[in-house]
Amino acid sequence: MYGVYRLEDLSIEFQELRIKAEEDNDFYRYFRTFRDSKVEKLIFGDAEVYVNPVEPVNLPKNITNYLYIGFRKPVLIAPVSKAEIYLTFPIEIGVIIKKNGEFEDIDVFSFLNAKYTLYGEPKGGVISRYWESEVFGKIPEVEPFKEGIMKLRISNLSNSWCEVSKAVFDVYGMKIYYNKNAVSSIAEMRIHSRRVADTSFFDEPLFGDMEKSIELYSARTIPILSTKFTMEWGI
Image (cartoon, rainbow, N blue to C red; front, side, top):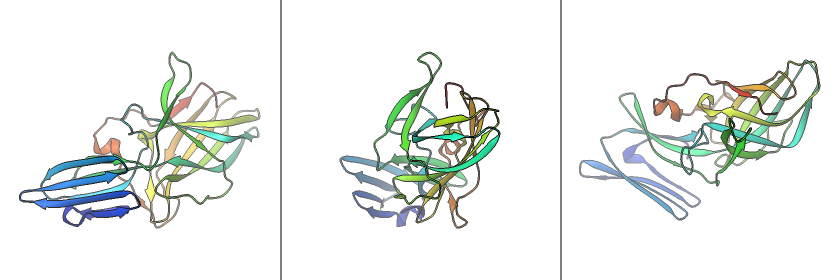
């Protein structure tokens, strides 16, 4: 399902999902049906269509750019040491059109229901997309249209043992890659104390044959000041 299409060739059927574009005189009718939802738009002009995983903070509407991954089991990191773990993250799928180098997202959907939570204090905290993940020592097997694989490199820069039970990211810096079998992202957590860490993403695939997803914040021309997030309300 993931890939690049021409509008006239866009036709996807997968489980309960149906996506199609039909030519109608001087425009195309874009249809997407999924479960009880239906989207229909008119597109004037031919274009390339990118169907790929996008930053998972767009549904049911864009209310935050933060992703909170809670660990089902906490991880203990020794003083001044490093660890590498694997997590999962939720997938949203974007339909993005391109013409003359310009991108426009026309649809976002997901096979999962979105949940949100507050990271931090009521005053000053951040609303975040919530996801709970097992912690894996090797690359897990997941359903590539529901869950992505995140490699998280953890560096404990402090002189104390630190227990990590969550990771919060600014997904405007998230780099997502995909192939027919998996969706991936690679991130880093740098621990400064038992309560404070910063997180960021790397622009590299998990596997060599992966394609890079179109970044929605870039397609929407959202100005980005910083893609690093400081976790100051506990790790």
